[in-house]
Image 1: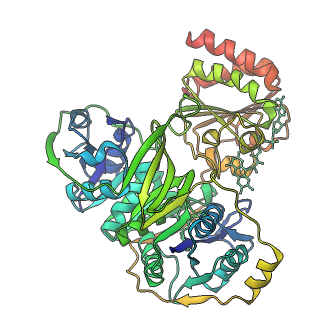
Image 2: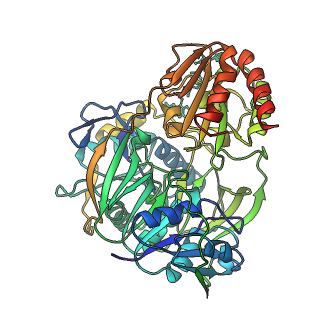
Image 3: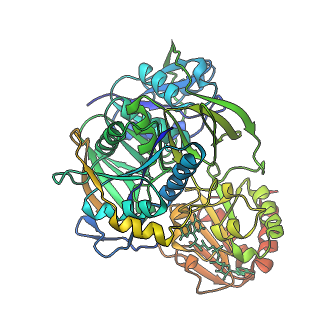
Length: 310
Length: 248
Ligand SMILES: Cc1cc2nc3c(=O)[nH]c(=O)nc-3n(C[C@H](O)[C@H](O)[C@H](O)COP(=O)(O)OP(=O)(O)OC[C@H]3O[C@@H](n4cnc5c(N)ncnc54)[C@H](O)[C@@H]3O)c2cc1C
Ligand SMILES: Nc1ncnc2c1ncn2[C@@H]1O[C@H](COP(=O)(O)O)[C@@H](O)[C@H]1O
């Protein structure tokens, strides 16, 4: 049995909570992993060391980690990470880094793993219309979808080693363009409320935003909404040509449930649909369907949530 | 003038129903298309040529039936079309796929490679960064903006705190999201040219596969949901989300 290595997920230099799920996935592979935490300093390493199930922690420290540059990240992380099965988060940068690392080591990369059963890994293919079950025949880099493994709790504190790295950056960020909407990103959210063409006017998304605020949720949209209204940016789009999301709760409002929309959200733990058409395909996939116009349903939803959550 | 490559893949139409028969997906009845993001990659390659001149080569990895996506690319206006294949290959893993495509990119001495951010069948997004690593090139993934400069390109990529306007010097691999261009449609002249075009077939050395595909299975079935008629049931659903589902 070779060693298991986790590449901790960070967000703007801070430890991302999905890291506790990655450790859990590594444990499912049968070992207490070495966790590599990349950063410009070792400040996030202590938080990793506190996670249960961690073998040891290596803080991989270098200036190259100040912004995401695939080539330099892969080079620096590769130097710090022992050989073995490497586990990354299936986030945008996590998947990119996983690919680079695997290529560097001339091994396979297996993306979006959603289950580990003994030596069998499961990943969705054809946007979740089928699952592929595989067994590794050697070392590989795998990425894990968020929300599929239970996060590990607190442990006894693992040993931390610091390794300083330097790698030339091949791409240079010239400017950060602020996001048009400062709301929570659908890719990051544990609860999402999305609107479709049935919302009739982009102005009505304000009703979704108020509910999102009550729930701490992100607001998403169908492609029809994004294509029809300039006010709804592509960054909000969920689906085949938008974002793939895996929240605990997905609320679809005025969305018919086309196969390409389902491709992006069908793995959500719970799906609620609000649609005035009882025949809308979304109801076949909803755990709780409400046949109603949004005009009638959303005010009640908002007042119920506010009463419950304060 | 740059030597531009674009990677295009043949995949089932995203509307296709995917059935599992035995322990493999049954793709015998699906309609095949160019993977949706590859259309943006192809457009990016054509824009690059229009800005700076050069030659555009479309490359696919696959069996002879994949010639169709190359002809589709030819109809749009690419100069060369190359298919990498060996009849002894099947179910290639990422390592094998990237090695085969990398050798084709080297063969034509490309300086920039455009590809889709992920293929509609794998959904992986592994190929662009993986090929870049093997070439020891820079890469940018999931780009949503593209400008051409004397010494390289400028792309916009989504980042945690916004979108990053990023300069990249060539050679580089660029994986394309949608949003920065509108893929052009072929015209009649292009379609006629494509009919006559010759596909160049290349062989490549590939390593052994690092994975065994044990089976394909249908997605897990969820327990059937409940449907309520009318907005008066909203409180019951909120209570269920709180008490049964434990998600709020
Ligand atoms: C290659 C390709 C990629 C695609 N990628 C995506 C993707 O990433 N994401 C995506 O979403 N789609 C995608 N699509 C488009 C997809 O096929 C559908 O067209 C789209 O999802 C429909 O959006 P919608 O449900 O909002 O609109 P519609 O299909 O128009 O449905 C609107 C719904 O609102 C309901 N409604 C109307 N009024 C009300 C009301 N007052 N109250 C409540 N309900 C109401 C209607 O009953 C209807 O069900 C893609 C298509 C293709 C071909
Ligand atoms: N067999 C292939 N032939 C040509 N291009 C490919 C192939 N596989 C992947 N690609 C390219 O790599 C992109 C990402 O694929 P993937 O890594 O499978 O998600 C695709 O959109 C294509 O541009």
